[in-house]
Length: 163
Image 1 (cartoon, rainbow, N blue to C red):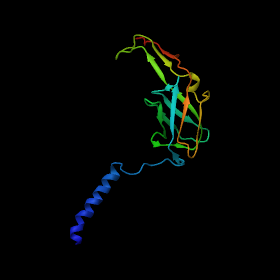
Image 2: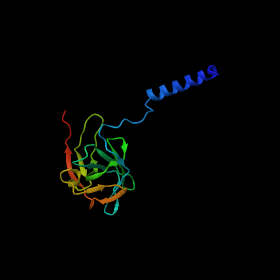
Image 3: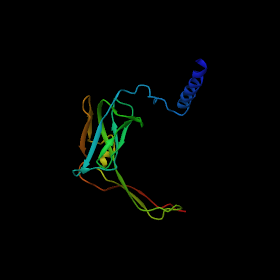
Image 4: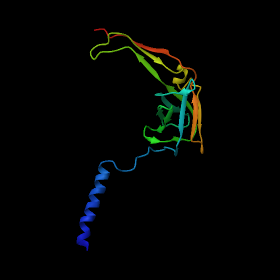
């Protein structure tokens, strides 16, 4: 009987070894990472979903980055530390960045200026000046924030390179 089960034991050992080698093990959580709760943040602008905006939740108490990108419905899937779904409980300032670039570059040289515009109020793009806040608390799974009127504010110009 031991003779018949030996190949099975060897097969399971090899499989376990392969899972370990190729990363099929639980994600390693950073030390001090608090418990994360599912939380959905929806952003609107002019009563419409804000699509393609980068979102960052910033807190004085929580020192792990919480980020997301809004989808076609304006909903950001928030992740902590770049890979862990969910958000630590707490109060956060909300930073929202959505830009548009105008101008072209060729593969070799830039011949025209490139203009970069913010499509949200530039005050919302900075943790020191944003007026948006969200409270992530037990039992609260989502919230909707409005970023105000549509804007198109020039925030940077990249001049053609000189050769």
